[in-house]
Length: 168
Image 1 (cartoon, rainbow, N blue to C red):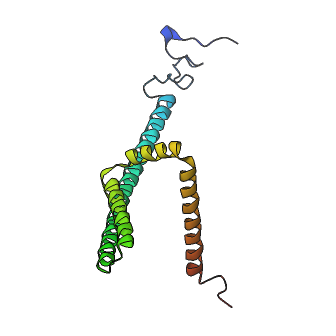
Image 2: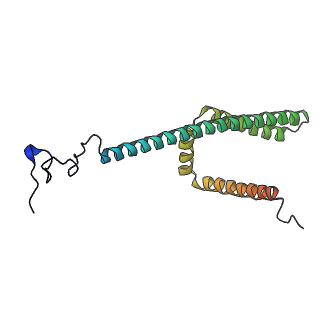
Image 3: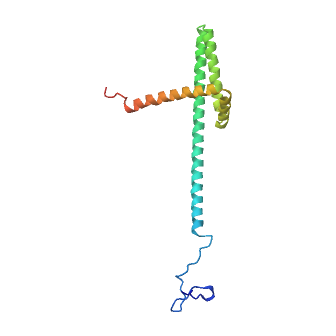
């Protein structure tokens, strides 16, 4: 078998003596080859995923900030209610109970200000510091919140399904 004649580095010459372009295709250059196209698609997918993640993170942060302000408002409302209760107890000459409810009102007001003034990064750092100083307290509070959450889900499951013993 002999190699086809290639005049001047061009295309091979077929049996009729004409140049054949079907035998050899040009090698794609690095700018438009399949690898480059794959790389571009990959970059687009990565860019889109990062963009979606950034949008989700921004929406979550916005939602958490809104929830933080709502919690601060609710705690502030509780502080106001405790202060009214304290005034009522003082009017009925129950000084010890009034002092206790006033103390609770001050703590609630402090918690409300804390939630309003601090961002989630600072709150997280404060919680981490508390967990390092008082791990038993944090575990106890976590356990109590877990029990309350389980109770909440259990009771909401009954109402949504019409109760466990709907037929009884």
